[in-house]
Image (cartoon, rainbow, N blue to C red; front, side):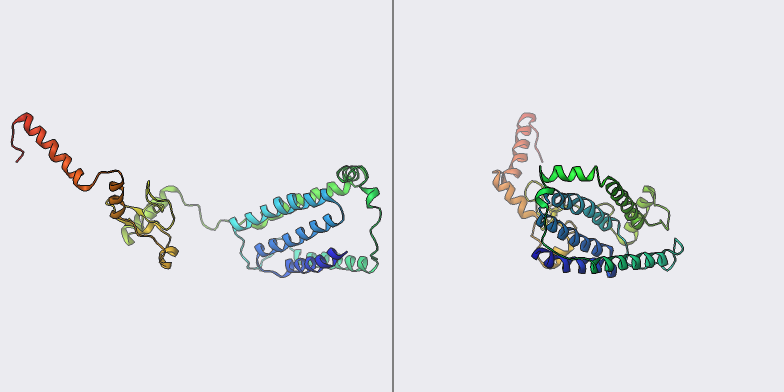
Length: 272
């Protein structure tokens, strides 16, 4: 009973928040609070199967799927003044008030007492007893709940759907737009080079190197550059690499001279 009196106010506040928050992502997070609290109540009532299903299926799969869809697709918080279905607001108010009246009447006639009969209900195992009830006495309710879940999934897709106001741009149009932007403003034609220096560093704060050995500042995030955490990189790294493999700049420049001397000795011609 202690867990109920602690979690019940939290669940009620989170459920009321679903009605008043303006963003769909916040509503999904509040619904997660309600589902997790309900799972804890299942665990307290010695129903491990329902506890696991509530966490893994409802909270971990279905709700998080809705949340990820909302985050990826995006649903704005603005209210549409045009009703696509006539009378839906009046109908929703009527259904909501009717549900509130039923809940109030039910709660006024509810009495709390010591939970009894759990041992008999879980006789032979909680999972076996629950399966016997679901697929015998409550099979109609179970199938109705499945239909409601499917309806909720369709409703989530309808909410996430947005009509395209402009025609989809083709690859040719995007390429032409990039060429015009490069000619007018000098914008980069393709994707920016990734951070890190090839074969030496692999960090987001280390700029990549251009063919001449100079650092490419565009390869580092502007946030890191503004914070001053971008690491210096340039020709000094090339010098260090040459020193590590034992090929200094002097040796590299000496090899062509030696090759030219050998060619001169064979042909007998003056290299000058």
